[in-house]
Length: 140
Image (cartoon, rainbow, N blue to C red):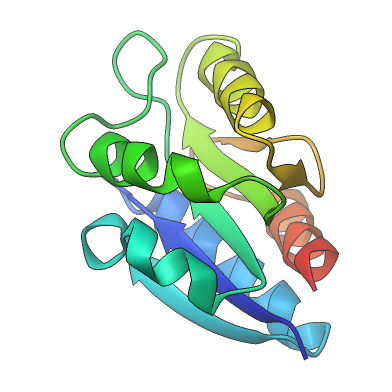
């Protein structure tokens, strides 16, 4: 059984909703899952999981949230090599540049991305929920 961590930061609740849909997909695929906020997770927990899903919305000029998420993710980057990984987040403006930049960063660290970074505009709808669940299933 795959053990998966879902780690997220959410300002409005949209990325949190996505995180729990990813969790649902992991469980439906038979995986074991623990959900953490960015402030509850650190690099020392990476080795406890077979796969990790990181979720963060687009902030400011299309960057990761800088107060909690970015420092935590930077801390984890050294542990991404060979790790099964998925990334996701919501946005309200822009064209998804933060997600493309984040994907490149994960690839440069040697992560095994199971899918392209998943973006949802604002609140996830049924299609967004299904995409999140499929992302979770891909991690198992």
